[in-house]
Length: 319
Image 1 (cartoon, rainbow, N blue to C red):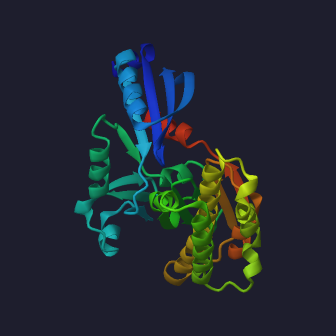
Image 2 (spheres, helix red, strand yellow):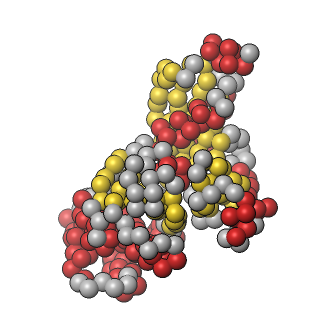
């Protein structure tokens, strides 16, 4: 009977994720699994709450979904609870999603905290970003997958083509960086950022040639001449350039350390393939730096995170 009713009614799917102080949103109207319309929006928090309420007024069959990028999540190459116990993971503190050959887990505390933050409205489905890679994986063994977004980086390594052997996540400290920018003038920003780059480079292990990072340096060179930038946009442009360069350097460091951990603790099979998925444009120079550090050819593929979240939500509704 429920399936028959679904055939006639329209459903509103709202997918969102937070980027800094903005809510990035997609509203999709579906009927009998067919997309009737799809619109994308960007809101401040107050506007977003009003938008959610208007969706429910317009259609009571409204479903809200998002992703959670908490550090306390990962993959296990089994759905068997004994595997979790073997790894020392407390089953009472996590929520597990079984996906045929393997499972994804997320900490219950993090889910509860996230729901408290969203207390002004109900979130129907909270997905792990690891699912975004799972839905886009290829039929290739010994493959490194990277999902690069403005808030976090996800890394999955598949030893065979069906299930991941290794997972890791890195969250960018965007708010901390923004506070530093707001509390300093432009000259101090440049000086502090130059120092932070030097520190980050020192931390990256086993770099044989500092020229490997020349491409990233070139992307921020023009910051040294602030006078040439328009007064109304220079500060924002500087902030964006600094954060982008900082995130790229931290990502390369994160990837190197993750691969090292994989070889030392999980497998002796060498990686053969590499993919990077991204939702916002990335530079070829950035990808080239990753290739030089991983010794892999990295194929690029742009994905729409909001599209995937709403696809996942629709699957849940139809279960």
